Image (cartoon, rainbow, N blue to C red; front, side):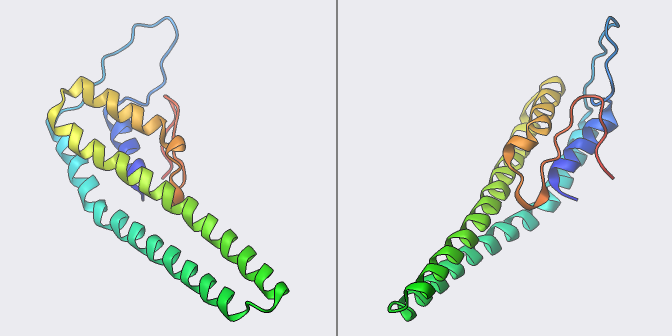
Length: 157
């Protein structure tokens, strides 16, 4: 379970993801201090995993770059091998860079959420949670996938 899903479960628990009927009076949804503390605890428990993933992806990126440079040096006289080395290295580095970017952006958004939540009112906290949850697909969540939901939809189990 990733941290965007944790945000979704919290929003579902307080009723923020329930369908809104047109023409009906909108209900005020807010979270209690207990909900906020539970969310913060769950997010910080997952923080070390996200940090570990960022470190592993960065090391993989550097290792593939070093391997590509070594292979380019080793096969410097063979044009076909150089083409394969550069093509394979660039494609591999692009996929890892995309995943690293997505994981990094999600980590930054959730870390920002963990800093903001203790200092805002419950109504403002709900606005921030909904904004981060609905923009999760724009975060490019890397390996964890985009899990943004519109209001009224429930997070996957």
